[in-house]
Image 1 (cartoon, one colour):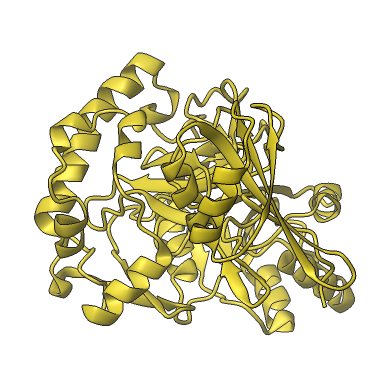
Image 2 (cartoon, rainbow, N blue to C red):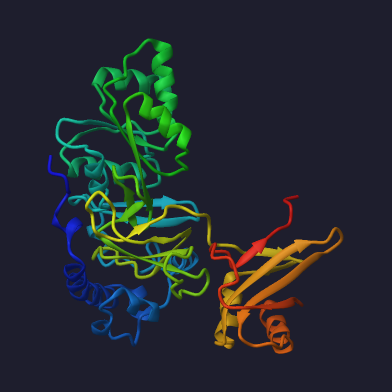
Length: 408
């Protein structure tokens, strides 16, 4: 097996920039021309001028709630699929409900790159315990197993005793599923006296991978790597054996932005993951995942040259209720648009033992609070105390709204 899935993984910076300058305008134009949703959302945008990642900040962000509303008005996919419905092989439903499309074509969701990095290929038998019911996870990994030439056992989740017996009978060499379920299968195998030592690899996603569980697998001789993906976008980023962050997939562009704004954060700062997929069939442009992460500096020691992210750092949908009113990151973004001299804002919610308290801390060179207090009241519909601070003083933790109240 070759070390890399293809030549895209090891492109130089100049090669990447050249390819992006070709592919990104083409994808923007495809979305404008072939989807009703983006023909409206990107109306007036000259696709030829969107040639690098920094150009994307001039485009609107598409949120899951926007997609849901569009699908309600124009079922099933809201006008965002570039293919006619008759050419879609699968349609899935995720909580919301949100509907996603799928294709049977080669590595359509792009998880093959992740399995290859784990060392899975011809001769391997992959026990795929991701769900085949409603959501696309099961089909995503089945498509990937086919892409690397391995054999798939489409197990789905549950029925642990049968899972353990099948792993033994089939000589399973790789597990695919949530991080902790493999341990449940292994323990059941131990209880049944089954030798499951042929399992040497685990491709996990869909939940937290705690160090203890990874160490448990390591002690059994199982290499465990995780990837980051969504039902809408498919594969986004993946660990390699270098274990130095998650390498961004070659089929997507990742931005890290201040939640609620769509504006890029300072390099290395935590923010919301916004993804543009280069998939021509389902061209989601600046799709907000609602997840927090950060860009890591430099390149992976594994030799792959694409950008890396730090992994999951929490959720960006930080809306909270204060005195009966919701406060949302989008409202903070509106305030910042009104006041370009304010570099950064952070809403801090607490409770003084009797009442909720609301303080808004602002990074600015101004020294007067009064104008900001009135503006915030208009935007938040609440009265808030204002604290001014110097640029760089606020935490770079991705939080626009920090709720310090103890849960009830």
